[in-house]
Length: 352
Image 1 (tube, rainbow, N blue to C red):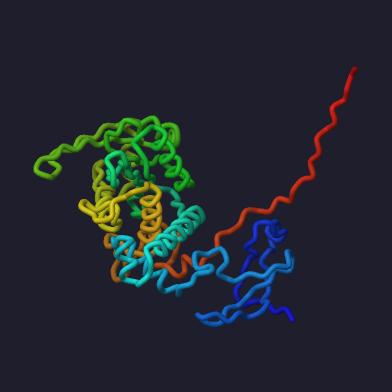
Image 2: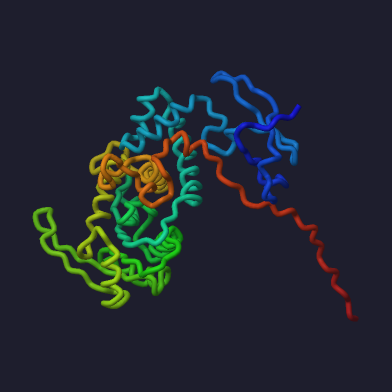
């Protein structure tokens, strides 16, 4: 006898007809129980496509040979700055296994951010680039980062060279994470030449762009000069009134984020035994670190009395800090199913 499952599940197969409707969750029922080495698991059944699946289907935990706590511990060690070889030694697994886990976690982190990482009515954005070195001199890339100052949300990052195309793609991702812009956004960067035209194309009139030029002496900033590139003095004053953190235009918050990224990513350490060999490895590590920074880790500057919030809590995305188990147990939604159309070419008529 088919019994409903206490939790709600959707069919994970993209070609299932139940994904086209709004009531797709009521077609999934409990089918049987599966005994494994890690315990007893439930197997579910979809009434529409007549297929069975496990509740972990679509998550990084699907078909894992190791316990879930080992996967969570590996991702946590990675976010604390441990190298891939160090994580493998601590957990007693092969480095290839940890590498596959990182790829799974990074793929899931990108799907999670596309669904949940959205900031409403952003106040101030700071953008900057971080230099990284690879195992060879020709493998040199930069890390683009964006921070929303009021919520401390690490909005986006991109690994690549400092070209116009990469800057434009990075700006589009930052704009897609900012929704319902009711007032001009204050965007502050350094004097990188491609930011002006890229921000003008992506943000348009909803952006007040300021470039900050810093002069350094003995490792410290001795002088800072700001230049208004987009907008006018009235919109700049209005954007500064909305900002509760910066008294004047600066890049202090994004520089602090860059320091955190260098400490929490083994590929970006100054003298690291694990240099970056492929840019995709660095991009995967940054995606996982961004997920941990926004949704799991409490931020020291977001302390209100006894409560210390995460950037996602400050932005109103979540009501409490999440755990890695909760995030990796989430199943990404599927695209609506479109049945195939029986297309046949129109016969060509001969007018002769």
